[in-house]
Image 1 (cartoon, rainbow, N blue to C red):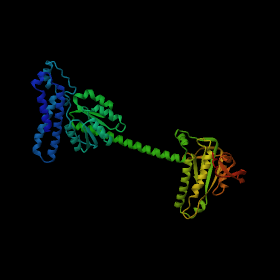
Image 2 (image 1 turned 135 degrees about the vertical axis):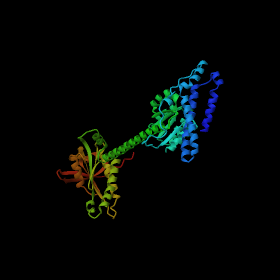
Image 3 (image 1 turned 90 degrees about the vertical axis):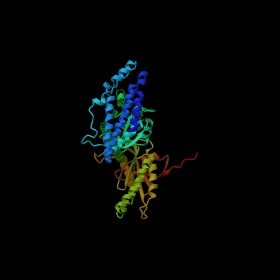
Length: 478
């Protein structure tokens, strides 16, 4: 407060002198602006000192502090009074100089003063605030006031420093001065709002009254939340800070809620993709209520774990589920590896299809590779008590109808002769072997070794010629 008073004395003595006026070098607008800034500091520090004196029992200081505070306010009012400055303005005019009319003149005296305390019933919010001002005393006074209100405060002496701080620290509000060296407040605001990470950080601009008309619209256009002229009323500043913090708090809650909705939607998407192919799920989301498609050529596989039903009679349920989960998880991984579509599991049976919902020419080959890999996976597993697992696999190729059935617990399922024959290939097959129909044999005979089994009686189909798939043919040496 003493330093600000000393600077004010020097400022007035240097400027309001006969020699200065006679020389025509007096800049009345600059004098008003700089004087208001210093008086604002004296008023602010005076209020803080009064609070300190009252809180620490130094009652004898309070009367003098009030006098200083009142005198500073009186002088501030006079500086903003055009009638008081009229004689000096007239002298300047006679010397051929010009004095801009102050758009803020009379503002401090024409507006009814607010009480120096928060309005009754108002609840102050606290936040993390960055104060940006090139004037050290301005920053110090503002930071002290904010800290007393419970805020956590960081400070920066210019726009570049402020942007550096914002890259490493997330703040709730920025109080930004306009006139600063290196990077002024408007440039800083533009860069801040252009950055996606800081776009929604609220900013209150602080600047002198005579900059108000030229700057306030521009600041709001760029994205400032509010604008407060200097010298500012502490109660008004606190009210606007509270409004910004409340708005940010509500937006943060909204963003958290939206993020929760996004997470829930992603979870639902994952669950949906666990039971439906992606292309089918997309069609459902687009509003299709009935999905049924015909495919002229696809390959269907059924696999059944031999002896698993007998094993379930003397193995605890939790252990049974663990073993099934281990085996079927590996089957699922193989289906993804070979770009095939798992349809469902029924007990210890597993069903997968190739060539739909996205048609592919090599569906039978991809299914053959998966079947051979399934045998390898199962032979490496055991029940934990020395028993080995075996799997019986059946494959058939041909036309298939695929679609969704059910309205609540819906599934993507297959129908047609090809599905029935693939199931019969598995049922009448052998443990540890892959039995394929003649239609699948025609797809695979050029690249795979298949052993004829002969004709077998198939329920509902009579006698059918089948084959055992053993392995891929060796690649001939070049």
